[in-house]
Amino acid sequence: MSRLSYYGFFSILVLFSFVVSCNKEGTEQEPKVSPKMETKTNGKKILFFGDSLTAGYGLDGPEESFVHLAYLELQKKYPDLEYVNAGVSGDTTSGGLARLDWVLNTKYDVFVLELGANDSLRGLPTKMTEENLTRIIREARIKYPSIKILLIGMRTLPNMGPQYAKEFAALFPKVAKKEKTEFMPFLLEGVAGDRRLNQNDGIHPTAEGHKILSKHLVPYLNKLLK
Image (cartoon, rainbow, N blue to C red; front, side, top):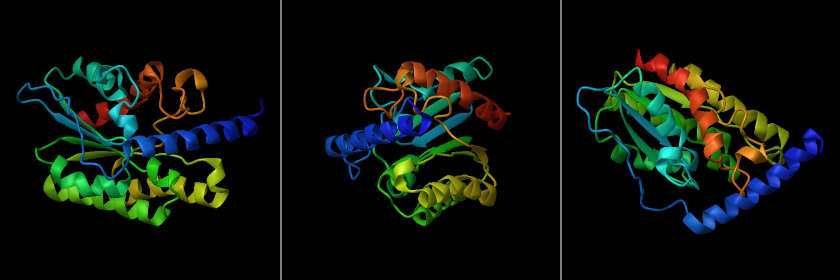
């Protein structure tokens, strides 16, 4: 199968998955965050703030998510490390902004921001996504001025059109540069489009896929935890 036809097939799977996910879960729900936080004292704290990718949608348990796997690797170097997984399936940047104050109920040293994919699946204006991400970053810093932030970039689907795809991909590095945050270009690098590493919906990584996400993420977090 050619690369172009493969991504066309992948796009259909993703759109179908999105419709099913929205019908099943919705996006205007009360945040049902199941925080996983180690209760050790005097350790640095990481907040993972995102959507279904962060939440570990479709896995057998939170211990299989890239969030927890990254924590286990980092704990070898930082034994007192703590974290909270504040991922909510179906969340958009607007939804994240709406629940931000509730989530920032304790001080964090590192803030991992993984939102925007659902904005693109809905075809929301890229300017709106950019503004929401900027506001989330600024409000987190107002609350905790010394917090270190990692913005994770995302990409959209070819069927959204070349102009939209270009604008969407460009907004993440633009925000990171403007707000002076650490930047990870694409969370799903090496996983997106590989049916062996994704669940049947074609969009959410399997446990094996999450291992790859974790491996890519750890170096960024190591840098911020120094």
